Amino acid sequence: MTENLRFPWADLPPVRADETPDDIAEQPQPSPSRGRRGRRPLSAWRDTTQAGQWQWWHLLVHGPAQAVDDFAVAARGPGLVPWPFDGERVEEDMFALAIGDGASEHTRCGLSIEGCRILARQFRDAAETRHARNLMRTDRPCVLDFHALVPVPPVILRLGATHPDAVSWLLRHWGTAEAPRGVRRLMGRKAGRRLPGGHRPVVYGFFTPRAEAPEPLVAALRARWPDMTFVLSRQDMT
Image 1 (tube, rainbow, N blue to C red):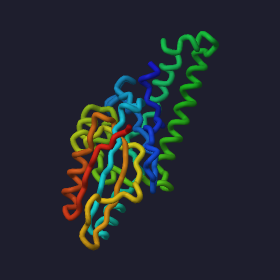
Image 2 (image 1 turned 90 degrees about the vertical axis):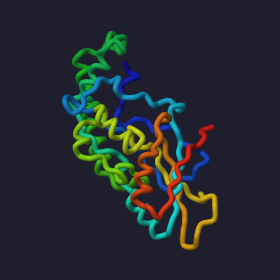
Image 3 (image 1 turned 90 degrees about the horizontal axis):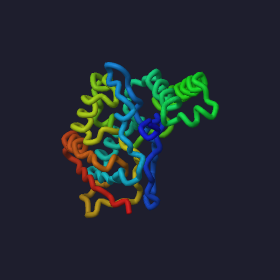
């Protein structure tokens, strides 16, 4: 059961040592939702903790210098999707994990049912505090916030992160069912060709689950900024 529990502060995927970041921001994962808003079992959360399941991307953006600056401003945000946080669900999941078959040996070693409840409550309190802090943080904004560029509608947000309709919307409009991880602006990267006078490039790097490509989001950027060029490319992790 432990492999199915998705912690609200899931670890970031591996970072490429050869990339020099200009700005780095954590991408906290959405928390499970409850009941009619998309309550799902623990197994509904995908296991993306293995390095082989991540894809590293570069997004090259170039165009008139002022347009590039305007895009950079529009692209900044907190770097997370403001899904509703269900503390009760988190507490239930942690209690089930602590007292279930996967933790029975530890329970026999001395953790009582009441102890499991206390542990679950402490975990919920920590998760709620972390969630609130992430929503309010402005000290290290994400330089390429998918939700800032292509916002998730309120009606979809209310469904919760694991609701099938919410996942379908994200895949259709973003190409990935999660906010990107390890987002950074890569300094010193070139466009790969000579640009017209007054034009300049900027390159972003980020991770998504390997099976998902954020091409729909890039298509939306091209439609919104027709005078600019957006080139999305997969990068080898080896």
